[in-house]
Length: 241
Image (cartoon, rainbow, N blue to C red; front, side):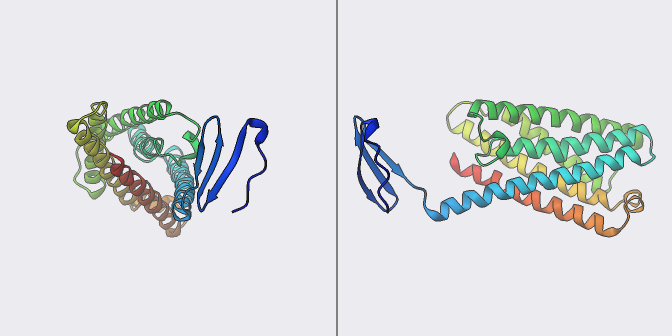
């Protein structure tokens, strides 16, 4: 490993270098340890897939929101599509990513600011989900379709995740268990919301609106990619407790 440039002007002398460790001696001894190459590559790919997931989330939301605003339907159906899409497939996944160390939008924030964004987006997402559910119940009543079943399951799990998240501050075994419940219910709730979204894409009204079935295939593929990425990076956070 090459010797670093002379930094004696700062009263710090380069002492030694072995593999990934660099040692500087001055008034205070400084030891710098480089990350192993494998860990660095994992961090780089994690950041890349998070950025890719956010782009796919944007594509899906723009497409469905454009459909909700352009397709001729009653106001309750339009509100249901708009609110549930924003809640389930925009606010909740971005809230899940906001605490990740490799998420670009929160990279420069401290831990407290990241938690604020996490709570704010989660609360706004729950608000949209609740009112989106109310609108469809007022319009069509309770349904037992695949789309409705996954939607109800997702709403219940995400609401449970938010409620347990309010009790996850502090220390102790009970708080650790609550944090596990908070993360796991959030992950499974988001997966259920993605299943709700993809099953809704195959409704006749959307198939008639899109120019071809390939568009739906792209939307489903994008959803599968960002659901897998967000679920995996969120699941990894379980091992830090």
